[in-house]
Image (cartoon, rainbow, N blue to C red; front, top):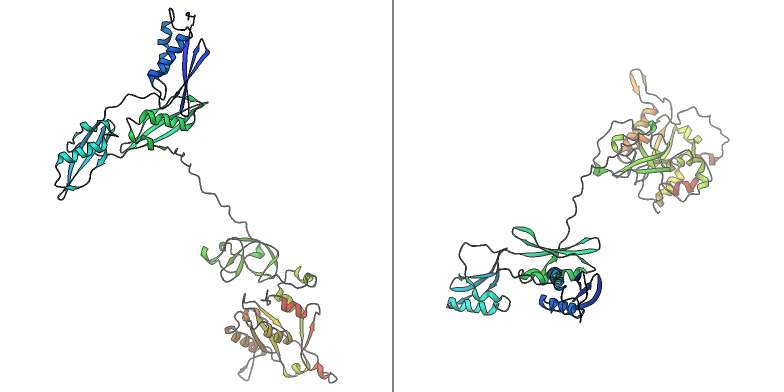
Length: 478
């Protein structure tokens, strides 16, 4: 074929899995694609194929002989070309273990020395036999092991070497970098060419083919885990100070230290959840719960919030309680507010009446009730604490002194009675504080009073009588 005029003759390679495609172009126009298997590819076969293609198309000839020489650089820089072997030597040493002997063989490279063989421990075997046995076992994998020499004591220490790789990207091109990791640290030993469209698997396999003669363990290399940037230090979040409590929600007692483990994180009370224990005013806002089911206003004990009373949810008809709940009264207080005690003539004559008290054993709240509800509750709630108190209201109400002798009035006697009950009903002395109750002038006896009137009379709100008491704080069956 006659020679044709060509100004530029080029060829490039593309690696696709196990196939290498060499594209041959003249003046930028593709004229031929040559395909090779990775395993069978050699520089000589590639160059011969490209030359033959150039000759067949009339590119090589008079005037164009230098084009092929100019285009040889790309073919020698392809990533799959074998690299020149590195000088590798082998050494051995005979070791003793009691009466036994064995041989250890080392591979020595410029990067260091590593153990590749350790023979069996034998008795009475000459050194030459151990050496020849090691050579026969290794020569298939390490061709140069036949020339191994005795190791000089004190030479390079044994090192453990591993390999890692990472895939880098530049726009649409990718390349692989391989690192050797040993006792001296990590160093780069290979950087592949930038390739368009190649998968990571192909780049890694190409690197292994290039490196395996010089670095036998490179086939087991692992992907290099990128190091994450250090997390910048951040200042701890600033907790805003708690909102101040209103004056009516503050305790008049001194602040007491309470360990954090003794109370739970603050919550928010909604309308109808709590009343302030001392004043029975409704309370909404932050509150904390201490051990023993005690509640206090505020977000922490340092705010010295007033103690709160939790209004238990009941199944009482809401319409019946609405007038009372709107005032913020507790349910125990509702029981009392629905009852008004009047003295019978018999009690007036004797100057003494009975008062009936019940204590809830869950929250230790105390309620005063009627004799009838007192007896009913004993049957339905036997775990609660019950007590009935003789209550004096005769003259003298106050203590007096006659002829140098002091006489206690009904007020002092009632107070002593209540204080004695403190051991069996804790808190009763705080619940009952008016010891002159019923000690007001009473109407004179009325002989015409019917016998039924000679019992304690109770004026009750019919809509609240039994239902309020049984379904309020004492209803443990919920």
